[in-house]
Image 1 (cartoon, rainbow, N blue to C red):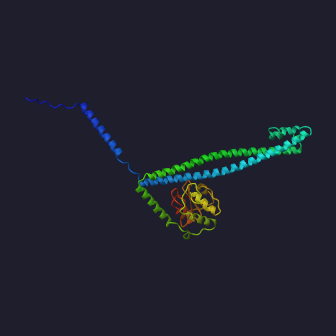
Image 2: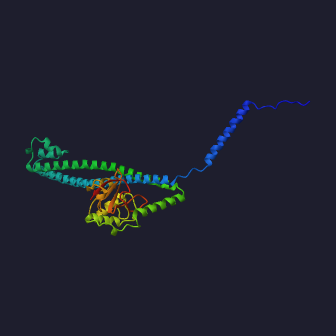
Image 3: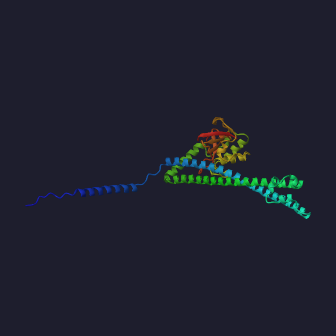
Length: 347
């Protein structure tokens, strides 16, 4: 008779092993699928906001660079002037010492060097008058010559000290200059990398949107001076100079005539009109006299933007300014209140 034994059941241990293996396989499959799935492309709106922020930070670093460069140029000029003064002073010292040596030689030929003259020719002539018991120890001409030598030595020592301090300050300023320059380049590279992260279609869409914004801000391809209120004097000339540079590229650290940053455009336009402006937008924010509000602005007024005064434009009338926006853009006009206004200054 056939046997009716029950089929053998898998052990609990084997079931546990199989279950764990299946779970592992599912988990691995999920990980592979996750890595295989393409990462979502960045949204062009988010990228644009980040690029705008980086460009603003680059402009802030540019104005820091401009300030450091202006300071370095001033220090270098002062250093050169002091070095010239030190060289001339050393020549005068040599001439004075030669005069005293001639006196000593004459005394030697006449029977010996006077002790007071010997004292003059020591290694420390500047201490002579302090060491001598009285000026009567030397003749009047010798005392005058020695006093001149002493005064010249003091001036020379002071000039050397000042020159050393200026050179130390120049070294520190040069480090600040290089740091700001590196910061500008870093921000601009980050902005370009973000732009490159977009698809070709999104980059084209961003460019089209920017061109549309430009046309809306200008009202035409180039704003015409004939439609604007006419400024007078140097301010009117500065407006004409700045407007004549529409379309020139933004170049950070540049003051023209072929490219400009924001404060550089103001410096160039007013410089051509005979006015020397400070180099940075922060310094320009304290130049001239204050204007109460945009409603009181006149052509040629400087409109300083952002709380840190890191951008500047020139008011041209009809609620518009001409300015150099940022890297990748050109000199153009925009609505004066398109950015947060900090102060307005009349040159």
